[in-house]
Amino acid sequence: MTEVAVSVSSFTMEADHPRNCDLLIQNIPGLKLRSAIEGTRPIIDQQTGDAVVPADQSKGLASLPRIPGMLIRVLPEEGIVIVTDQIDDDEKLKSRLVSFLKNNTAYRSDSIKGVDKQTHKIGESEMKTLCRELFNIMEAGEGTLAKGPMPKMSEIDEMPGRYLLNPGSTLQNSQPRYEDEYEEWKSNLSRLGG
Image (tube, rainbow, N blue to C red; front, side):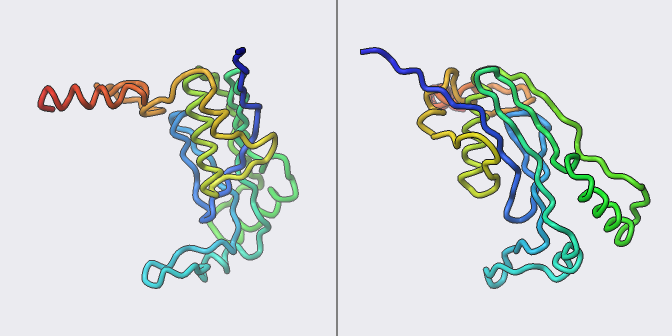
C-alpha cells in the first residue's frame, strides 16, 4: 500500500478577535497581530455574564467603519510566513482614522501607517505547530480565514515535523523541545524526585 502525501495548502488568516483584542502568535516570538476593530463588539459584564457594548467604546468608535485586522499568510511548502497590515491598502480609511484621531486624541500627524510587512522563514516543526495554532485561533472565533482552503486538523497532524512543546520560547530550560517527549521527561522527573 502506498502512502498518500498529505499537505496543507497555503492560507491566510485575518486577526478578528470578538473583543477587538490583539493576538499574540506563540510560535513566532514577538509577533503581535492587531485584530479587526468594530465599535459594536460586546464585552462580557463580569457581574451579570451578559454581553454588553461599553458606552465609551460605542460612542468613541461609532463614527468609524470596521478597521480590518492584520493578515498572516502561511506558505507551508516553502516554510514562509508573511504578515501584512491591511490598513496600508485603504487610503480612504487611513484618512478617516487620521481625522478621528485628531478630533478625539492628542494625535497631530497628517498621516498614519500600518505595521511594516514581515517575512519569517521557519522550520518544519515550527510550521506544523504554527498551522495548528492558527487553526485553533480560527476555531475559537478569534481569527477568520481570508484566503485559501481552511486546513483540516488531520492534515496538519500529517505535516512533516513534530509539535513543539513551548513554541516561541526564548528562555533556556530543561524541558524537552517536542510535545511527544514530554511524558517521558515528566516520568524521569518523578523518578528523580523533581
